[in-house]
Amino acid sequence: MTYKILTAVVAGILTGFFIYPDYLVQYIGLLIDLGLCLLLFFVGIDIGRQKDILLKVKVMGFKILLVPIMIGLGSIVGAIFGGIVIELPINEAAAVGAGFGWYSLSAIELSKHSAELGTLAFTTNVTREVIALITIPIIAKYIGKLESIAPAGATAMDTTLPIISRSTDGSVAIISFITGVVLSSLVPVLVPLMMKLTF
Amino acid sequence: MNILLYLFILLIGAFIGSKDFLKPKLLNRIGSIQTLSLLFLLFIMGVKIGLDKEIIFSLATIGLHSIILAVASIVFSILGVKLVSSKILREKVKVGDDI
Image (cartoon, rainbow over all chains, first blue to last red; front, side):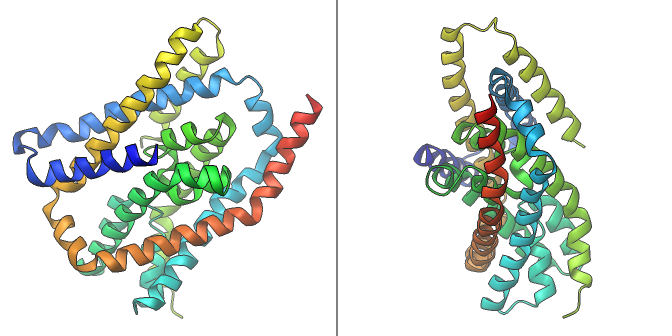
């Protein structure tokens, strides 16, 4: 599955870069939305077919929220360590990390500070999404099902949800959706907040 | 935003899935439709990235920095979830035992 995903993404990037005709550009957002809705519908069917799912999720209760909390903390702390390696100020690195893979929003927010930081937020979070798409099946197989939600971050409720659902099971898919919702709601709050931090 | 739309679509799917009128043959076919539409979606997402010449050219200059930040974020996220996953999944096993 990972090879197929990698091939599809790379073929898409090459097509977009070299041959995609300009007059079709306006439809690309619509195509992505339609594809996403169709896939989420299928994820819903998978969830509905497993009857005891709601009970399982209910028993796990508020502990589920530990998943987005740990992913949020890990993303920011990880970005700070990465920032030390590339000599980026701690608050800027933390803000880029707090994008959680939602590249458009984090980039818009951080380009208010500087175009350079906005671009870095954009490419870092695009890179995160692409790495997530490719590694989720591998992480689910070799590390753990819940851990496979980690690379997805805020995208765990939309673009990476179909992959997580296919690589794990219905209850992890529900946790993934909840994780994505929580992290997405935190992005607009945390990105500006991290910029204000002084160390 | 889109959250409500996504939730609505998931719920419709879950409702249809919970009723048993989908025959196994159809469900098998849905599996391959699912894979195909996933790959199509990923292809289109790739096209969107590739279309933005600015991203591609900035990736050439700050690509390594982006990879370092993204990989570090991902690795620490996985470690973070690993710390709590046994706590969450243990409960799940208990439920399985009860049933």
